[in-house]
Amino acid sequence: MQSPDDRMENLKMTIHENPIQVAIVPTRPSGARSIILTRQNSTVRERYLFLAVATLLVSFVGLLLIVAFSKSNASCGLSLSPYDVSKQTNEHVCLTAACVKTAHSLLSGMDATADPCNDFFQYACGTWNRVHQIPEDKSSINTFEVLADQVQSILRNLLEEPITKKEIPPIRKAKLFYKSCMDTDQIKRIGDFPVRILLDQFGGWPVTKKNWEPPNMSIEVLLGKIKGDFNEGVLSDQWVGPDDKNSSMNILQVRQN
Image (cartoon, rainbow, N blue to C red; front, side, top):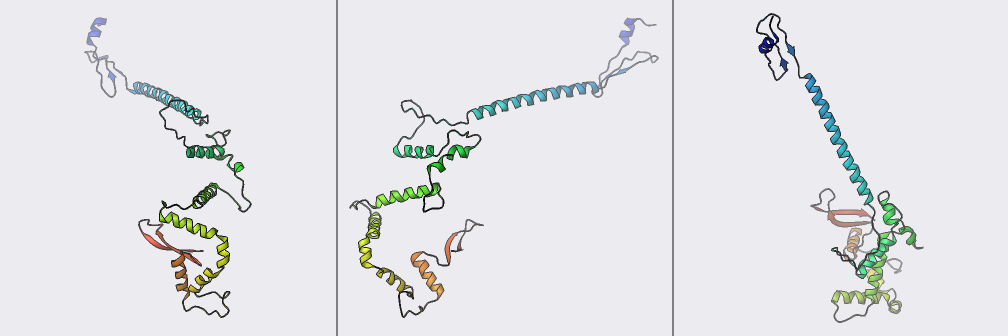
């Protein structure tokens, strides 16, 4: 019978990559015993460790997203406090009369009590309908119509200014044309004579002539003359514009009036 020291000397350990084997082999064939340890236990531990690390990473990223989202919601509100002109800043703020007027127009239509993160339309245009009433001569009103009325008022004021020698010919002619349209006394003296001359160029009109006869021109020529001289479409309107299917080409387009 071997002593414990002899058995320890006769032990032989071999480790293989796959699977891991720990073999205890005596020098004599009789009574050989072996212990085989596979990698299964080690692999399971590695999987649990990987899942734990992945769970921690996902939780950390989710926490960061929640914090970032909460900060973005907190900073979503717009500051409407008056601008301090005396405060020195690097930002360029327009304080001209036009900029102040535009800012007032925007602020007058806003609803500062609304949350812009929940309802931005109410926040930006909530009080616009209360400020702008529908005129009696219109069925609706919108921002474009309001701007168009403002432009018309500006143009009327410009055209009503006195004509000066420094003005370029197009501006001078526009003012003269506007004044001729506003000269009601001259319009009454002339009457409908200019209109009759114009109608005669297109074959006349039975209402203005007792012995009217159809003009010696086809309807196509008549419509083409009206379109060419006055850019007015009758029955249909024609123009040249980009093709909707190929914007690199211009085509003749027709639309019913």
